[in-house]
Image 1 (cartoon, one colour):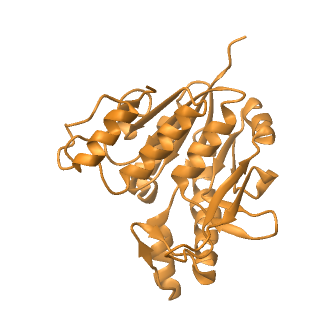
Image 2 (cartoon, one colour):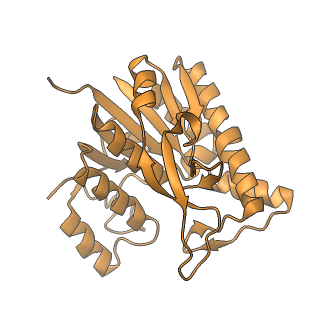
Image 3 (tube, helix red, strand yellow):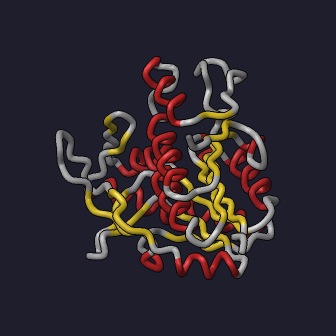
Amino acid sequence: MSKQKLTLVKVGGKVVEEKDSLQDLLARFAQLDGLKVLVHGGGRSATAMAERMGVETQMVDGRRITDANMLEVVTMVYGGLVNKNIVAQLQANGINAIGLTGADLNYMQAVKRPVATIDYGFVGDVVSVHVDQLKLLVENQVVPVLAPLTHDKNGQLLNTNADTIAAEAAIGFSEYFDVELVFCFEKPGVLEDAEDDCSVIASLNHAQFKDLQASGAIHAGMIPKLDNSFNAIQKGVSQVRITNIEGLQKGGTLLVGE
């Protein structure tokens, strides 16, 4: 028996931070056919809130150092402000949604990242995913809106990369559904030339990705996004696309297995 289609959309960057683009995205998300899940980031909002609260933001290679004060900020912003704003707007679009962190329903556990050369603080590396309860929500036409927060099952919340949350959740859901994972951000796809939005790579396999990474054409934040994507494909996710709002239903860069 064939599995039902489930579309898991991860939205980040300026798309989730700006009111007009977020409204546009959520309206298009509401029109997607079938079962769906939304994962969001919110880094710029967290940085802005931290500044208002007098909490210093420290970044290393684009990754946030999360000390105890910053953990309070990201919990408020990711688990509260951004998450519930998205839920409210989905309700306005006729989508019954519920906002969750990894601690809710114990759906995603992590461990505090061990200190190697850098102490990232309360940053979580995912160790287990349990989507059986989320599956029941999805099957009852409830859309889970997943914030980039996990927990360690010992009472500690952990800040976790939203792309990782999306990929791990997609892998978990692939046991039950035919999963398409869509990363939606401000660019139309993976670009051959970072300065040229018309240079979208229509399809990309892992070997091509590594060649483009070695040449420097693909760099910075796109590398972990693609690493997460190919890991998801290897572990059972049917299809991964990277695109912008306009390409949400069809378009962008399609990632393919070997």
